[in-house]
Length: 393
Ligand code: HEC
Image (cartoon, rainbow, N blue to C red):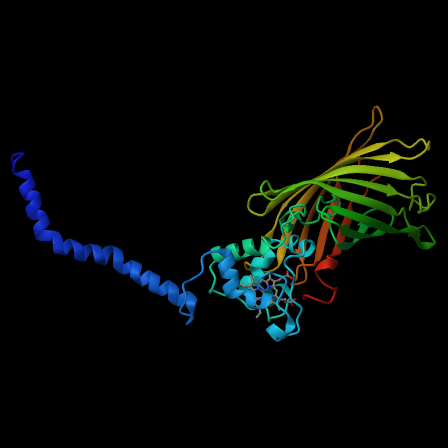
């Protein structure tokens, strides 16, 4: 064993003898790979520009997007860009905030055609990493500074029956076919229109057709409903959106053939949407139907829940959203029993723009099935704000 006095000498000897080798090793182990990485990175980005790779969303935007989209996000003018395709205005909150990151990410990564837009919007391909695309999108988000508008991520897939919390610009044609008993088909056309950041008005027109024994099909326009919805709360951080709605159902249908109730009904209700991990979601609607006037009809409470999950085909492609609804309703009278229905269904986007969607499901009564036949239901949904019926395929 060396004495305490000898130790420093041993150390000094070690230092002297190995100093040069350590420098060499250090350089090889640390600096060489670092130098290679830096060289590779700048090669990948600068592509001959000879500049340092931008790191902030703003700098990335200015380097890669501003030549077309303008430094202010409003779109450079036609004379500058040299093409006629109108450029989006990212400062327009009504348009920009409703578009979810998933759609913009697909467009930025794959180019305009990924969502049925022009290929003048180039694909960033591998030139931008996912992290950089996120930074650029954060910068796009900064062009609308108004936080009153709920983000498009909170716009969950529309269930067949449960109403959504997100305010929409949509037209939906829902068809319900009785799968048992006498033939009965109902079409319902719903038109929804947003105004300002948090409001939406709605018009629902049902068309009921029934098989009348020996006389073929009969029926007509049912009870037309007018509605108003207002978002009370929304947060992308918690993934939640809560709205309050009021609907008036007018007695425009015919009571005798079952296409109408014969009296006006007021329907206040709340709707709630919650994002869940891994593209999951939960939606709830609860309210009461209050008949106007003294027709002897009872008030009714209803509560509806939908849970599901979205799957994206091939990373940026078609979206499939299987979900299941549990529907409950009960007259608000002593001794009344609740009716329960289950509606397994799946929604799928038909157009590349994802603005035309189909949902198909079956409404199965869980109890008290006598008066409520099993029904096949489907809808075609057109988000008309995002494009015409023939655009975006
Ligand atoms: C060569 C010009 C050009 C460049 C560069 C460009 N874009 Fe575009 N971008 C367009 C055009 C044109 C459209 C509209 C396409 C259409 O409406 O068919 C568009 C559309 C978009 C949209 C879709 C908006 C919507 O309607 O939902 C997004 C998002 C977008 N660009 C982001 C970017 C980002 C981010 C960059 C930079 C990484 C970028 N663009 C670079 C031309 C360009």
